[in-house]
Length: 110
Length: 110
DNA sequence: CAGTATCCCAACGGATACTG
DNA sequence: CAGTATCCGTTGGGATACTG
Image 1 (cartoon, rainbow over the protein chains, first blue to last red):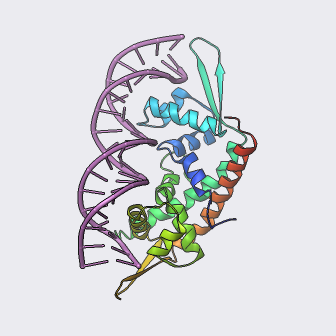
Image 2: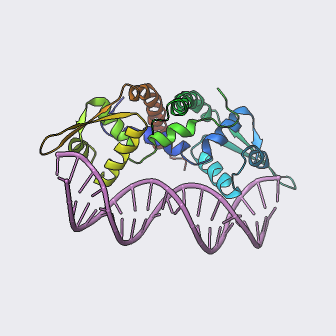
Image 3: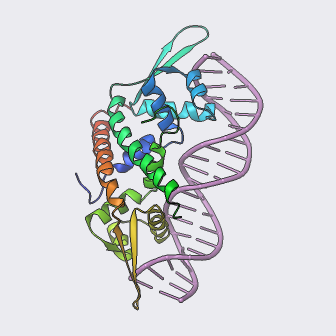
């Protein structure tokens, strides 16, 4: 591990750093979902940002997008095999974040 | 672990999500440093952002700031005990990011 | 040395309207 | 249904100048 210079903690922050990306991730870890499903499960997300974040994650290879050529169209999003490598990392991040929030709530030093 | 709604992956992304914060972290993991040292070791960071990020990290309890009341002033930054809990998390994030970058370089699919 | 203050630009994200 | 296009406000961050 190289801590001196180009350490790519930033990389994963960019991949997960959109406002709704972690939420999208958890949703797709839970089960494959259609665009509309994601909208319903993620309150307050706009179509624009949902669409944009989905394309970002797709381009990073994290999620798969399957289009069924029907009318009306059906599109299913799922976590890719590669995307599954993110799960343990996200769990670790999540655990730290949970503890951090708890700490802030208990001791509102700021 | 609760993956349905408020999962705090976002929390750690906020804590580490400034442009220079991961770099600052690695620097302070390596050794305690003064403001000027950090400037030297982090090329291209502006005084404004270095100062701002340091205060952010301090307020989150990640780093300690020790002022020596000398002339000229001397200020030493260090990783707090609590901040050290971030190290293993950052290592995991770093490892995934490193692999992700390598993958992109090998297979420039995009 | 270790910062602050100010100005400014670019990126992010929300609201709304439109489409194959 | 699953998006895209446009507009617009907010925030993040760079450049420069100044200070205890």
